[in-house]
Image (cartoon, rainbow, N blue to C red):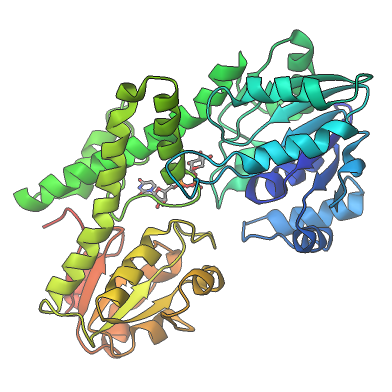
Length: 440
Ligand code: UDX
């Protein structure tokens, strides 16, 4: 097999934890560094800080192989040949731009420990131009005796599929300034490349831009179908059939054409905003004005679903009971960052409804940011005495609900399927008023 490389992964949040595990699974010797002691303790104990299928198993496996360890001490990264920067770049509190504090702090903390010839590889999603800025910073801060190079290797993993996306990505992108860096990255990912993932080698700014462009495209595709869904609604057409028909055109494709409550999470919303902000800084804001529309279409969905719920029960929410199925921003995730489901739940609550929420994995996180909602121990409990049920995150568990059984516990049989994936006929047959989005 390929040779073992000594790797450090700086930042063990979503991206870093999965990447560290992935590198160990590829046979490399990995140390994950994080300033958060609780996170490091949990990871060392084989517990992922987030719910992600397959992650706990691999953490345990590589604690045993000895290929994976975690520490709060940057000095532990000193003997690594490759250092991955995997810290977060959230939206700034004061605007649309990305907050680069964590990236800068990570580079500053790592630099004094760098020794010999080594490669620092950026994976975080950053404004274009960051890589060059960090390269200059490293040249200034690393010991004179070291020989540090910087590369950019963006990450495209989806939550819920993070492990498989890391081990078998659609493509690898290497932003490099020398062929040495390319050789090192090819060696690191040898098994992934052998397994068939194509490699695109390019310069630093192009590599940075691939990531934000990909997310901008996906967000645009979702908002496109949601805009069409608004037209379907006023024209009594069916957006799901329309999407099926569009999807047969191989130039378009069916993926990311699911109309509904729109996108949320820790990536798409903040990435399109940061992209617009960066374009502005570069004097090219005109090029990305369409992304403001993409954002607006997306946010309109949340307002609209709350409005449909209110109308469905006669125009008044005060004192009425609403069941919300789903809190995570998407199924198979416990992530509630910018969750459309939680946003709608919050809107209805603020308009005076009694809102009971159930989500298979996202409730603990939801409670932290929205403690005033009721959190029910099961979907059936959430639905008890409800005047309307809102299906907002498409967990498999919700598709398996029996319409007749649910009917027996509610006050009124009103259902909004904001993800357009429940069996409309089955619910209607059981006496429900079923409403999809963009469907008659
Ligand atoms: C996304 C990108 O897919 C990934 O490549 C990148 O690295 C990070 O951002 P993720 O945030 O995990 O990944 O979620 P994804 O599965 O892409 O879904 C994003 C949002 O779009 C979810 O809220 C989902 O519900 C919504 N969505 C997706 C739709 O509303 N309709 C669709 O057709 C697809």
